[in-house]
Length: 399
Image 1: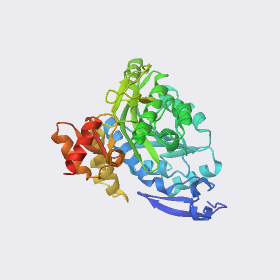
Image 2: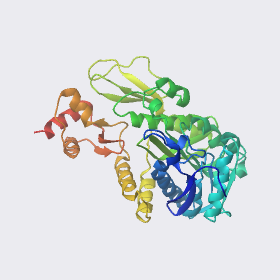
Image 3: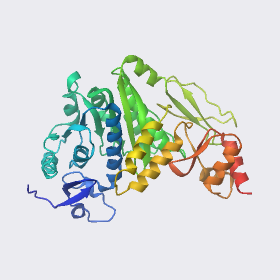
Image 4: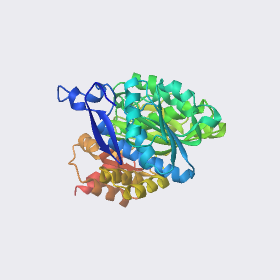
């Protein structure tokens, strides 16, 4: 198939796909070529797609049935084609894009990889496409939403098109609102207020989960996160969605607020969607700021992480070592408390030299608290110790 714009063949995972030649749309080094190309393709998200393949493979082994998968915002189709080729238990991949040129390119890539028996593509608005599969016997096992920006506009139609116990995957690239740079935008899109703290990326992920929980609850569905992380310029969520009002109620009970003291760095959580009217820091008496409502439950399922690590070890992935490091850090965070401390922030506040992170973790553990590094920040420690204890641990590690 001929296209009237520059294209090239790239290899990703076990597939070969035709994509726009992005260099033709970048006149200056800082320009974001994927948004200027006639069909969207972002090579920087290859690791995102690698992890998606691992997650779907693990989920398929868990449910032990042939999977029907949907990608309503498919772009050039590389993710959906990889699902069809690389995930053993996939029976059907239904792709969609509102861009007619994207549909033609996806059709070409389906033929190029010889998956016509598994993969199909439609040319509709994403929400209209998903709504057509909301009937009980037409729903998908897995829906992967990877938009340019926020996934919030697609959450309602996605959960309606998902089977009981289905897996939903969401990407959010609008990190400025989620991290508190544009708090009003976060409130509009995700229904929760962010805070510009040193752990703002965790708040971003919890706002994303909380938004999904409230969207699913409207349809009497509950949400159980299997894996959530933030790297580079985006955050990503994999969650299981279960039907039933009781499931929805259980999820809502794990919603609440994170309270943060900008004076002494103390933080605490408040379960419940009804906030208290006055928040005073227990450590220094200052007024605390609140982020939320957001998800306060677990972000990671340890068994899911373990299974993904085993799957990653058995595959040849271009960024395999980076993926294994990410998943290993997340496994270490499983069961940990909400939020983390960054050593740099505390040292800067109290004019201390910055010690090695491992030494600080050792000191915190020696004082009887849990402590582990976090994938959210290379200088971060997830611990149940209060801020003053972390400061004391830093001071001891400098001796």
